[in-house]
Image 1 (tube, rainbow, N blue to C red):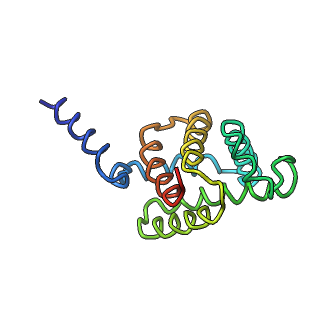
Image 2 (image 1 turned 90 degrees about the vertical axis):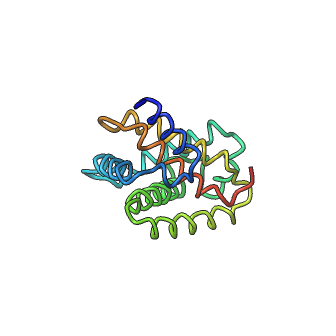
Amino acid sequence: MFRLLVLLGLAACSMAAVDHCCSAGDKAIVVKQWRSLWKEESSSLKLQFGRLALLKLVEKNPAAKALFTGVGVDKPTGGEFSAHSLRVMNGLDMIISLLPDQDALDAALDHLAYQHEARKGVKKEYFASMAGILNDALEVAVDNYDTMAWKSCFRGIFKKLAGRQPA
C-alpha cells in the first residue's frame, strides 16, 4: 500500500505544474549545495564554470554558436566572452538565490525569458541542453549532489526561461 501511495505521489508530481515538484526541501538543498561551491574566490570559478558550460552548449548545439558571435565565442578566453559567461553565471546565481521567494523568482524568470525572447535564434532545446550540461557538471562539482532536488528545480527554472521561445 505504501509503495502505491509513493507511486501515485510521484505520478501526481510529474503531471502537476512544475513549480510544485520543486518543493521547499528541494529548494533548500539546491541553495545550500550551490552556495557550497562558491566559498572562496567565486568570480574566477564562476567565470571558468560559465565559460565551460557555454562552450559545451555550443558543442552540443552547433547552430547555437551564431547566438554568441557578438560576445566573442571564437575567443573564449577573451574579455567579451568572459564577461558574457560571468553574466550568465550571475543570472543563474540570482535565480538559485531567489528559489525560496517564489514571487521574486517568477519576476526574475519572466524578465530573463523576455530578454531571451528578443534574441532571434534562441530555441527551447538550448535551455534543455543547458539544464543537462549544468546537471552533469554539478554532479561532479558538488559533494553529495542531490540529483532529484536539482532536476526538479531545474525543470521549473528552465521551463520558465524557455517559455517564450519557439520549439
